[in-house]
Image (cartoon, rainbow, N blue to C red):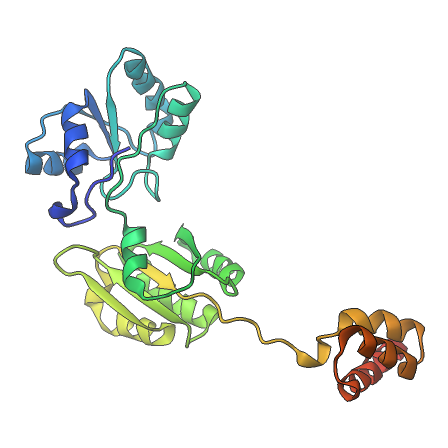
Length: 275
């Protein structure tokens, strides 16, 4: 599984070049695209097309070649195979057949965008591409809006404006995000700001609606704690069974919380249970 540049030819690793030279065949997503890469480095290894629609059917043929002692190198059009690109089906089939799957690390739009985002949350969630239709996209974003992790999305040029506008609407206009467009290419653009600001910028600048984009959204802020309800786990069962004064005395002994605050909350809970 050989990672290839996502734009800048200089990001090809020496190990990747050596593996592609040594392979007996290169399984390429698009032989025309990979052909340009091979030409750049003088690699003459033959290619066969292994795309999303034929990956499963081609797996048996490639496994037969592995069984014959050949080396098969899998590449996608750009970046790391199987990361929002073909490759996973072939890798799973090779594992199942008992042969080695060896990753050759390199360029990835995911890690490239994360490294430039400036967000310091220790955990991140890679979502990849959102659904293309508005309702389904908004449904998915709603599920993700309170995520405590940095969330990374890929998006196509013709959907980026609508996508970021939907993010602003659902995640909140002030949620910080980073738009990374055309990473490592000539017109690379990386801009950080509130989602509403990014949405407006993309809408008003047609250039930002060209090329592949990665959107990195900062983690949701921690939910504000309801101080009044902080000790409900203790108070609720006590108020249900005891007079308020006695329930508050026991709750204070258990939690150490101020008596007045517990008493006010207990009155609310008692009223609710009687309503």
